[in-house]
Length: 399
Ligand code: CTP
Image (tube, rainbow, N blue to C red; front, side):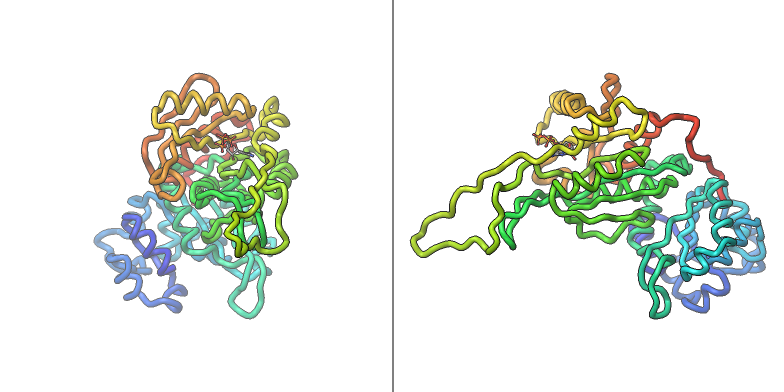
């Protein structure tokens, strides 16, 4: 959590650490104070002139409990306020995110399940813990999400997020990265997608309470907190993974850069140059299936899933680019398309993105150059506007 604190500070946020007495058995108060640059008291009876048990919660824009133990969630669910942290939870009206960490047995215990349900019903975000190595030699569900992923969820909640659990109870499917088509055992046809926009979409959806599945093609980033990740390599693998499940989701967002062509043949051995100086045989290409068009064809008449495509264009004129994007949306039967300009310095590998969001109504949402998290939140806003209203998630205040 020292790493999480560092990352949040590097994003430019003021962070106040409120450790529990148990937390101080793991990491001492001087460490928290040095890293945060603020007092890290865990006692209601310290600095009483500032009334910290009220002031800290009132001032916060976001509260994240990490790691959230079974005991802490039990106290939060019943409204106990016997230390500084639990008092903060009762006074804050900011979004509250719990990042659980505990052994599998504790996570699956009916008491914990009921407490998580209570917290979620009040609008809190309880991120699904990861599956992996636990404190002892054992492995299972209950591992704390990685600090980098928790930092992204916080950033998504703070940047352009609705501040509410408006995707609670929703299931969303996001694709990310770039598919690769093999030529031989060591070479492939691919593209420069980093997967960061898809990752930001997953983090933003988790920060708004959705249950997220992420189908990732060749992405080298730590798994986003609260998302279930399926790894694929080629377009046809992504096609199978998306089409197999799309119907069970409220929204499918195709942020992946999908290879349109594959080689008609894949060499079993590395393609070699010969001594005569000849170049190898030309590579013959064949079209890949269009995943977005297949989704559009199947689901465009149903309210869900809301199908969202991305159109990465190298056209610099905004109006021309939007016209090409809108034509692409209509041709593929997507409900919404996010059009952005790509180039050597734009889009793919940069942390920033700008875009226009179109849905065929003629209304265009312009998102100026901004973080991928903020663009992700604008995309979810557009999705939520199209979801059947009756089933929408709950609103904050949380706790
Ligand atoms: N897409 C897809 N399957 C493909 C190609 C693209 O699902 N075989 C999806 C992408 O994930 C994206 C959208 O379609 O959401 C548009 O992708 P883009 O590469 O911009 O469009 P293409 O259809 O490939 O058109 P072109 O490359 O000719 O501009």
